[in-house]
Length: 233
Length: 117
Image (cartoon, rainbow over all chains, first blue to last red; front, side, top):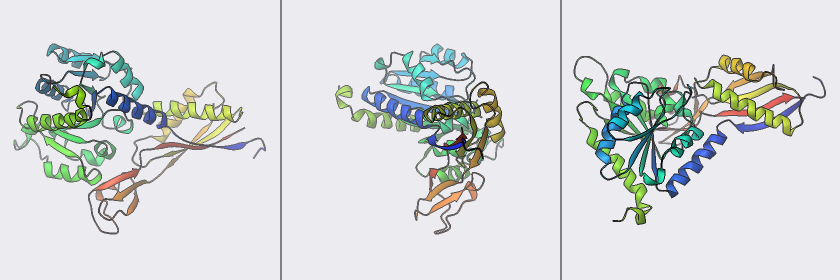
């Protein structure tokens, strides 16, 4: 080996910058009393449908907006805007996940001090969004019945980082169209995430929606209790 | 799937450390990758070759070390090293629990060291 060649100890994590920015954003939103929910799923699991119904259930008491990050399409933003939910479209340029700098872009285009609850509709895939902290207060994932109960085997990181798992399209269960088992799914998910809570529901029939909305309201309430001055009537 | 942004970060961190150490040429960069990540080594090198053109890191080899993930049994707190493939059939070797593990490590990308002059 040439004498001039040296070993440089780097010892640096690639996500360190993003992790630090995420923590800073979480603290900032907490101070500004804004609850940010990171919503992840594969394409077609029902993110936009869930958001429409959740926003409809909550927007009497809370001011709700959506930051939409699906790849280069404004279809979802239009669907949300048509039903009166404030939504901004992020131009993610084909990126496979959101990082904190992109979340900031979305927040900057909203009047966030006039909001209580912001949903981040993450890019539709189960790999990349699992590895990058967005700065959200809650991570929620949707899995739909047609995708199969084996997904935790393939994407363990995604299932391990979520506070709640919504199992959408349960109206498929018991139709003979699927051998999906909620019990099998639950066992597989809890292997690496014993604290996760599951909400089986159907955005189409509305079955199970109320449990999810109640849980989310409770989470927001606990968060808001820290800032009673704002929420006291 | 996100090899491109990860590679961008590797390059920028490597160039910063090279500058701090007054290096003029980077030969190799050793990256430790957590056992639960979904990273394809060949794409990492491919993107790196593209991004590092006309920098002092051009031609450098990425040495990827895939590390085992470290889990902890929720029942008896035993620490278990495993791979993504083995996670679902995992049983605690101590108390035989097959649920409720927490992830201690496995999703990191960590630049360990580099050879430069």
